[in-house]
Image (cartoon, rainbow over all chains, first blue to last red):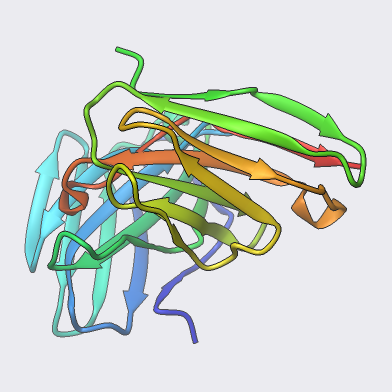
Length: 112
Length: 112
């Protein structure tokens, strides 16, 4: 079983919809949680970063962490065609030597 | 604002040929990483360098070697390319990994 599980999709939604992207994990030591966005034929770019539990909002994007359920989410409000991309979750324990563990990514397509 | 620069962007090799993928970062980051990304497999760590002068194996190191030439540059070498090494390769760097990695734009490699 992988440490981080992510539904590969694809997830197709109409423009303006609220999108929910999710990851589950098994390692209770994970403390830092990130979401990356990857456009086709590009490198992943950091979208959101949160530490421990709670919510973080940035414009149309909200990242949510529920450590008790080992579950993280990324919500996109008023989705746009430009949000069409693959979204990867990533997480790590404390400690500067520890590395990120990535989910396999969810492909999102926002339809006009 | 270059960030992480990878060269070349595309390459076709014949089985058995060798090549070096180059990566340079201008963010004064200590740590650098090489990943491969394959459909359905997500990002898999090949090698990483926690600091200048050190390198360590990741999840899938067989068939690859690396060199941390200086703080800025981290190269990946395929000594005898195999079709199984057909993939997209990403270099990344981090200062404090707690805040995520910065990725390059990738090298698309095909081995025939």
